[in-house]
Image (cartoon, helix red, strand yellow):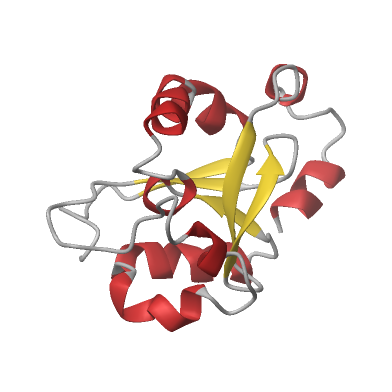
Length: 143
């Protein structure tokens, strides 16, 4: 859907030159194969902005990342992925996109070097996303 809209416009999207000038290595959620994949920010992806809350939820770590990089891996953890994140994944899939960036799954939280890099690159990540899904009315990810 979004890609079709972008292609139908007479002018290039305003952010394309800026969006593609700096590339960041990313872990993304593949919402078609329900797994984590390693890509760069030059790939098309949507980002999710939300309040995580205090509930325990699946987060990516150095220990579990390899097990999450296989087709269907995230569906095996469905009960650990907050409803809001699952809904965003479904939305991204339904509009014909494949990749989504969400901090809980796309940062290795026990890898302090990577975590600090990604936190310092948040502006680039959100800027380079095709679009950002913003959960304004949800008090946390369980809503």
